[in-house]
Amino acid sequence: MAIEEMGFEARPVPGRQRTAIGIVGNEGRAEPARLSGLPGVAEVIHVTRPYRQVSREWCSEPTIIQLPGGVTIGGGSIVVMAGPCSIENEEQLLEAAVAVRDAGASMLRAGAFKPRSSPYAFQGLGLRGLEMLARVREETGLLIVTEAIDAEGVGAVADVADVIQVGARNMQNSSLLKRAGRAGKPVLLKRGMAATIQELLLAAEYIVAEGNPGVILCERGIRSFDPSTRYLFDLSAIGVVHALSHLPIIADPSHGTGRRDLVPAMARAAVAAGADGLLIEVHPHPEEALSDGGQTLDPAEFRQLMREARPIAEAIGRRIAEPTGVRI
Ligand code: PEP
Ligand code: MN
Image 1 (cartoon, rainbow, N blue to C red):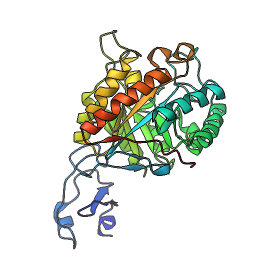
Image 2: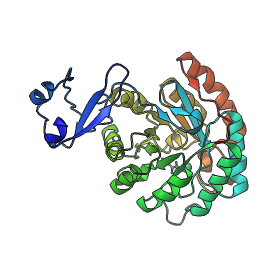
Image 3: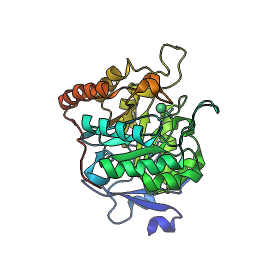
Image 4: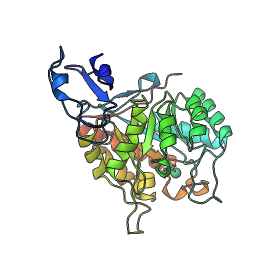
């Protein structure tokens, strides 16, 4: 009430010890003296970061995102999202889904709308791909992550997806971010290939500011001068994000390296570095993939990676989330 009278908006931030009230709508500093005099106010904390609501100052405890079937992202468990870069046909999608589920992934990640670097490359199956995802979700019980490439497409993606992906090329597309913030589903926000971590957190702020607190960040490699790998996979971003923000961050060593031979080692390293999840491209026949085949694991390689990742997670007091296997 008092905050609204001052012309600001109050946002409760529930915590274990106490409930904080965040203030937005103020361009400068809200008057601390007036706020600290209010009944029930123990302390006034000035948020110094430009990305207010996603900062650790705003909320010191990690955000845990609840998905259907009891899957959570952030906190103790590490969620593995895997699948083909592009949905090519229903048979390929189902084969990939069953392979990743049997190896222990709890989410299927596959693209229907593909933001390709070239306009002449395969652009994805679009709405037909989303229909295939819906059927495969029914059949396998896997949760779905898939990308929306524009604000107009968010509604159709949100109808099918458990998590909406915003890709690296769209990280600063503010109309897409705002629309995703109103979609009612958590958002997987990938770091732009030339974006600083502050820019990534500001992009997340766009989504949270629209009222959607469920943002999962993703490190997917940044542009460097060295062509040895497709991008430079920035492992340190995981620790930097955890220090600055309460949001979970997952790692995508598939796009991060662009090299199938490097994916398992970088995935293991990301788990050791504290990633809250992994995004791994897996195809039943990577050599035939219509996109990103060179960085895609086959089912046997993926199974081996899952076997190796489990003890690494346990060594740091975490565990790889098991597929729920329940019909959702
Ligand atoms: C993808 O996830 O398939 C993709 C296109 O990734 P990025 O946006 O990170 O390039
Ligand atoms: Mn891809």
